[in-house]
Image (cartoon, rainbow, N blue to C red; front, side, top):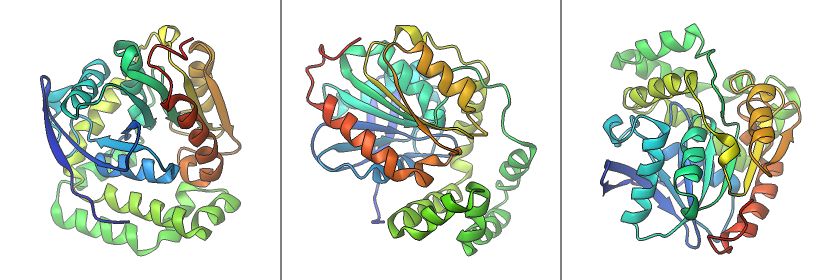
Length: 294
């Protein structure tokens, strides 16, 4: 993957860091926990949808966007609107993964006239009190020590196949990810970004954990086209409680069920996701902002 450099835009809520590529109708690409603009770019690259301008902000608390620019999903949605203003854009499709879901949903609620549709992958939509496992807490504390973080990074990148075993317990799924050069490169890039500047991702990650525990979104009031993709065996955003709630409560939402997929289904089920999401983008990118509403 080519080297990209982020930029910063000033908004009424504060600065926001972002990167972008492509030309055409705008798509906001919102990362999840332990993310940043770089993971938003990976999410967009995984869809392989030419003819669109993908804009990937670092949500507040991640990398170059301070948490003060918007801790709540509502404030983050307003920050996204401010970023569109700074770029001279009237509206956008919104693509989100995992913890980026609440921001995307609030953007559709608070800025309906600017949201052409939501494309959500493995996202949350209702309160998730489980929180991260103890091992994650230990890892994030150890990552504060530079030499330990460097050792963790070397170990994580030394054997991609071993890392994939944890992400994709299903042997056939793992073979699909590692056997396709493009998908393997995207998965490797994701692994690498997690350990790059990890301390700069922690404020946003713990804020996302707090948001998830208290999440309450009036999903029934969303009135834009919505496409969901969710793995049946997602251990982080459980299919029944998260995808089920989103699909049943958002009027007209379409759910693409990813058979035996986990939280990293973006990679293991990449072909199915990019095929349906590509059609969704084409269906709604050219709509008048007032059209296509439920």
